[in-house]
Length: 568
Image 1 (cartoon, helix red, strand yellow):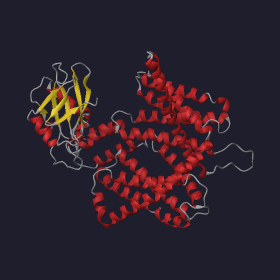
Image 2 (cartoon, helix red, strand yellow):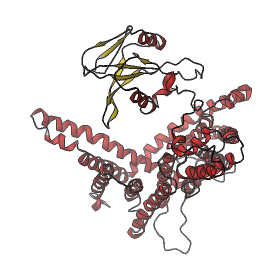
Image 3 (cartoon, rainbow, N blue to C red):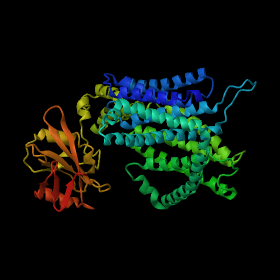
Image 4 (cartoon, rainbow, N blue to C red):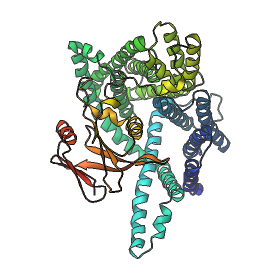
């Protein structure tokens, strides 16, 4: 291993160069781009952590097979579902699950140990998987530290050359085709140091375990008070929320379990919190299953009313998994034959293996959340007599090719109701987003400007679609007054107005219009110099023309008494 140390930075540079090529190359087929990037990322991870564990032939097989499976799964998803017009949550979930199951699979390979010539099979210790996972995470963190140390030091060195007029070194290093290989080499070197000095990771893990043992009872006490508040009347308030309930309670359950996952990963004591503390601790284990059940109840309410969506399918998978995992932990803690830390580590080892299998299975062809959601929405709409255009638009916008197939079948059964695919994708649901202001409700000041009105409408529908979510303060509801305005003003003196879109946020993006193919581009961002802005008064000042241009170029704006300008 020591003779091959140079392979780590060399491989890191090679992977960085490969990523630069994949990012810079103009791919005609995005299937290959996403799949190849997945393969390269998996290959880098496996080559740094799976080689040097057992026989070289077996290590190389694992290093090639795991990234290939992950890349093929991404390729199959793109072929059957596609990335276009697919919910971004699903794309993130797909890539995150690949990282999860490949990462845990390498951890399992590392604890399996070398082959032994014994009569009995060489079974691994599942409890060892927990500290191994933490060691891998710390090694990756050391890789980030390596990158974080390399660039400041190298920039300081290049700055010395800049002082004597030699700028070519930094200009070369800052090019992407050089910067990415150097970052990859620094990242791999950090991992190499962590692997070679693995004994130093043990006290680091123990420090993390000690911190988590302090945080666990604090978190458990807060969640207990939350459950008490819910039981005393907060349950109805919780279920009346429109968004994020399942995510909130699932995060509470998963967060409590993760603190326990960190608390048990280091130390060989017979107790976790002391003899008396362990008795109290065992009774805190029932809280995470209760939170998982609450999440499942809130998910069921939404599914019963609106059917399955990809995010709800992820929520169901997560809720069921957390429920089973926390029950498993409770059984391990109460029915233990060993010390509490060892029994919990063994249980977490089994849970990690099941989590990796779940992450792999849930994105297999036709079992992915998009395909399941499309079939469910098609069945739900088929059983209804009155179809909502917003539901059809959801199929067109968020469910990729399975949604298109579902719309085609629904359209053949009822062609008068199902609009063309392009119209469904451009359909605006006035009730679909309570926080997003309609285009017709946004005033444009002044009333006369040179930019074509169609171009202004394109700006509001396209680049400013997300910004329109901030036209009302959170929790203000649909009846709250609009607090957005679009100001058309020539800030650079070229005879053509720029567009400054004011929302409830404390900064403003200014867009420049290009009549050619460039369209609208962000020119600059403005920030005000006040501690707090009265948006209603600001809108009145804009409507009354109470603003003026203050030089320099991309001038500041003085609206009322508040000055909006760039950070300089």
